[in-house]
Length: 132
Image 1 (spheres, rainbow, N blue to C red):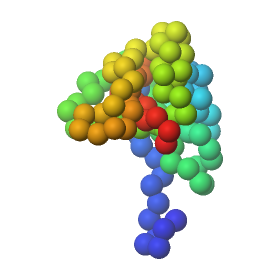
Image 2: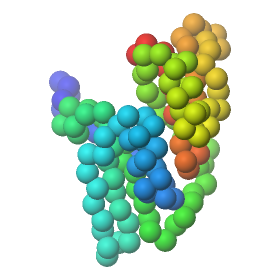
Image 3: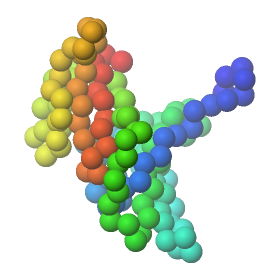
């Protein structure tokens, strides 16, 4: 919590196949499934994944509406960003596991920071940033 009493808790994305998304974020990106709760009356499930507990870290909320198999991503969403130690090795491993690298590692336009982009199973983009 900062001096203003505000804290960034999570980012939420809607996913079509929750188990496939949990596998991507946990097995391929190394996050942990922190909690998962079904809401039968509302016909949806919430799953929270992240690199550490919710008390100390910002996490990703995966929302699965049971009757919606896919979503249009919309034009307003940008991406999630993850820091990695070795971006080239990370991209090679992700690609070997069938993940789609949509921008190979290299310097960002108008800068020197090395970045890459991978898509999750629903098409959301995750930016990988070298050395963050």
